[in-house]
Length: 372
Image (tube, rainbow, N blue to C red; front, side, top):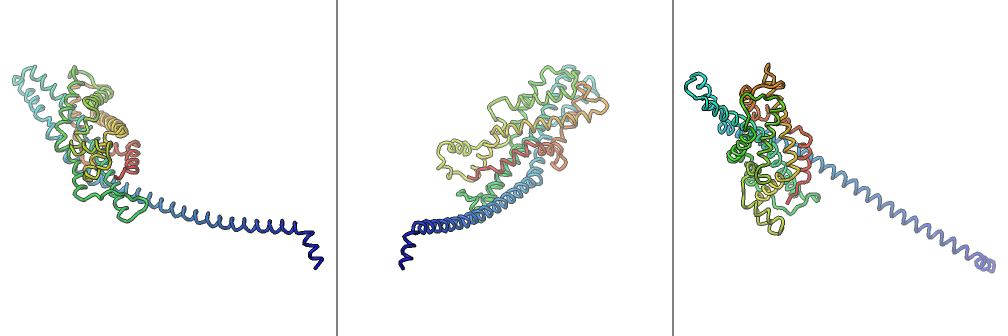
């Protein structure tokens, strides 16, 4: 016993140190083991979230591609048919050409000043129809894409909310079918009600740009391109900013009130219908600087293709080397209908859709659309 007591007294410090080290080591091991299990749980949770995110991204991408196809195969063909009929009716060149033909066959039926006046009217009307067609086809193609992307995004979120998705939960009310149909029917507004204002405004711009042009003035591809772009620029930049939006979207007092409300009191937003909110959102997109940039790029792309086609049609009298304006007018008249051809045959619509900036704009529009 004495030896044990002596041993304890002699080595107790070492025993305490050893016990402390062993105890600390065991505690550290337990802490490490708990931390390891915790990290494993976090990694599994992160892996599940990544899988869910990838699934949502894949669903969004599939839905995005689907609504683009809906725009191309359903909404756009119907709207383009209405547009083509309206332009053919409202900007019919045949009365003027028939009068000029009669004046040629019967030289005494028209005086020189009357013939000159008819040619001036035909020149302005021909360029008006060309520019109206360029603008209307470009804007209608872009506008319908704006519509289906806004609506498609809302419907996707509504569906996700209905399925109880925690990732896309929103307090917004669902879109009724009547509101959907009413909203998409707005694509016909340009052809049915917006065209008179568009034609009148473009004709004023064409008259200003073509002032002083003579029938014997030579036009080549550069001059034609500059002339069409000048008419477009004059139309787009005359009047209040974004005045042209009124040719695409009806003026709505509810939307105006909503625009004022959105910046002052968001609690009143619930008083407006889902349709009003969709229209407000649409006007906000159409009036944005980003959309304005896309419009500018798209219009230039269409005019480039238009001038190229007109040059090809000129045949032996190549437009590249130039021709009198009087000889160019029939070719302008011939190229016009192809601008408003049905989408499946319309190369101008395909050109718009293939512009990288256009593709990027609508990808971002769909991905970032607020769902309030």
